[in-house]
Image (cartoon, rainbow, N blue to C red; front, side, top):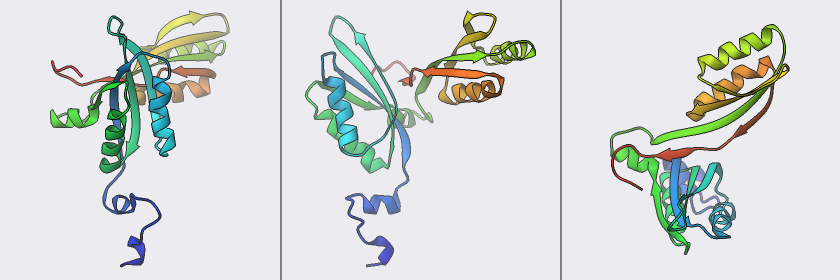
Length: 190
């Protein structure tokens, strides 16, 4: 056996050689009860999987169901294993890999949006420039005083990243992001 193909102690040593890690968005429908989120997150942390984004909210109040949206990274084999392990957790009703479904429908990615609150402090010319750039990004002023603005911006994560980068030299002082909310196009539900 070639030296570079020797097992590394990981069950995924072959996948590392042949498959490329990619980012996927998973949508998980669960019972809205105490401890469910901890069990889902525990599955990720216990196996060394990273979560790049996490959002949770009750989506069906009458049925007491919540939707967890997780963006994670891995090879196709690892992602399939994550999905399979999530489906085995008792209060999980459904797991959908929105990225796989989008590609099956001929689209690159599912619809993904993020909301951020961005605080920028400054005075004089910097305030005018801050407002001009915020307008270019379609960011909404949600709070303003003589020494700061708080903007709300909604869009793809890349748009939020760009807005934050543009605001840094203008006096960026705080950022709070929601994480990604995602859904596939078309009439089919989760």
